[in-house]
Picture 1 (cartoon, helix red, strand yellow):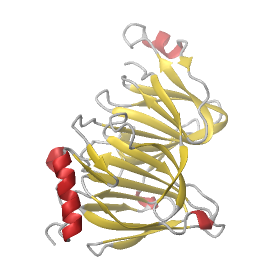
Picture 2 (cartoon, helix red, strand yellow; picture 1 turned 90 degrees about the vertical axis):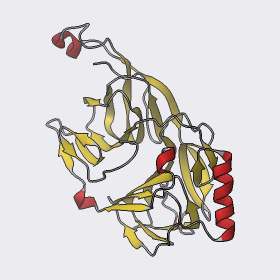
Picture 3 (cartoon, rainbow, N blue to C red; picture 1 turned 45 degrees about the vertical axis):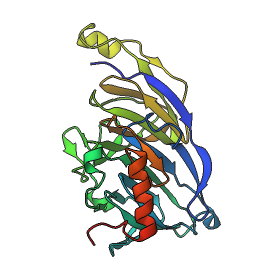
Picture 4 (cartoon, one colour; picture 1 turned 120 degrees about the vertical axis):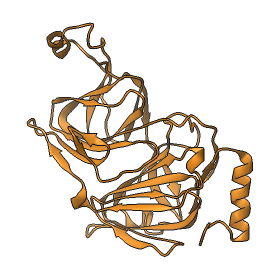
Length: 302
């Protein structure tokens, strides 16, 4: 086994989306192959209702999956197929847009006016671009929380940890999505399948991620556990850490502990034609999507 080196560190940048929602974007649009199969990651954390209440009014999606994870406040959502609902603190919605859907998301703060959540976009392979839309709405209580003896807590949204699987399944990218809290100064190892791309997003506290190690087998097990591991500079609030090849991630929390998302998925390695919330493989497919929007035939089979 070998530790995944840190290949890139990015600070999420402030931007505005929807009808005027202030958020921070870790990646998206400029380098679609960087985190393949993932296309975009937004952190919509805010304590000023005026900066988020206008929300994300009706907009189309085709060819992707959107993953919304709420930590504070609520998000009211609805779509052109008649689905309606609310995402509360701790809830997750994994929406497969597939052939096309019109969707809206309207954030509402908690009693203190706080709103916090994340949205991740995952690409769909060409053979699933035009699949039927699908929702997986997961309530907080359905997400398993695993506690380690050292005080580490892991919410398993998708994928598995120590044999416990998350409730989201049937996703093309075979993703892992863990919400991890580590106590101060603790060092932890997390396995990630070698065929997957992986990144971490730190949103509370700070910590260091290991940069490289000798493969297991070169050293004995005892030597491996005690070896010196090169740790990168401290990564803190709103930092994305992209990893290179390997089969485990090693992290050490700082003095105040840390909380981060660990996300992984199988790369698709297909051409990307991208315009806003529509992601296809070719320009011709993208233009067809625009024509469908203009002629009222964007929603298929309904």
